[in-house]
Length: 204
Image (cartoon, rainbow, N blue to C red; front, side, top):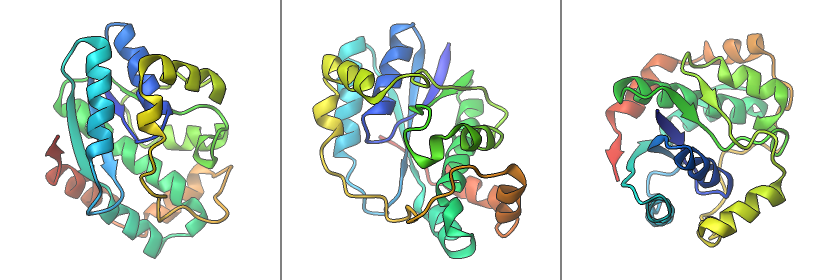
């Protein structure tokens, strides 16, 4: 099975990718960049470690996510930023999955660890795409994930400081309703934002 992994620079998503690889899945990594001048060396190192661990080459696509983030930040209720962000990521990953003939999207989500990963928000986020979303870490606690990350050699790479996301709200919504999010998305041309992301993709 071919799958698209939403790869952040954090601890969780590389572990999700490793678990998918260990099941024989073929990975295509998609990294969403929140800054125009983002350093990609951390992502390159994580992908290299996954390639080394699995003994395969992994196609990695960089997506400029900051134009969409700016639109959300400038036009929407800030408490919904994280949910809007994740829905955009899933839309883009869904488009890439279709283009690459992939069957599903893999994420590093673990239930309740951050605001965008409450059950309510995960349900709203999943509805942004028709592509199945697989969450290998959904029932893991952080220590379980860290243990695997250390075992496969991605932990030290993931904890390297890459700076905070500049768009995280002070009080993010933890139980967003779909109708609320759809109302926020009507303030923008979401389809055009997705097209812009895909148009400016870059192969690592």
